[in-house]
Length: 186
Image (cartoon, rainbow, N blue to C red; front, top):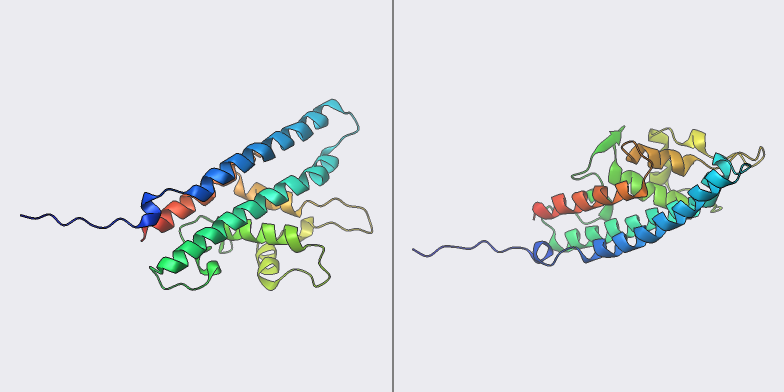
């Protein structure tokens, strides 16, 4: 009797080359954050607001790199079309934990990255980013430039993604498991 072998999709066989690059980038991000943590511990006048302002760039670039990873994976999924989706955003809530008000972890990563990239644009935030941060009540953490308040919206959004310890590496398994679960559906 002849056995029939099921074909394994190439995305399952070749591994996740994008993820390896993320791991290396996050090593650099974490090293930079460690330098700021040391500064926070050693300099008496250096407070949490200073730390948040100076590390925002690191967190923002980390979010943008995760966004790029997610959208690259979505492009792969769309090529395969196991479920007929034709837009990246259709995958943002698939196989991922919902944080609150129908906002998934992946959606929050995407929208925090968009917020970081476009928060100073004259046209403002796009409707999806605004809707997401409104659903999670994050706008209350946005800075008030007249009063010189610091920017905490991204930090508060990131805290929604962390289990307990504010550790950038906790974001990597979120995107990896999301990709792996979507690949398993193929």
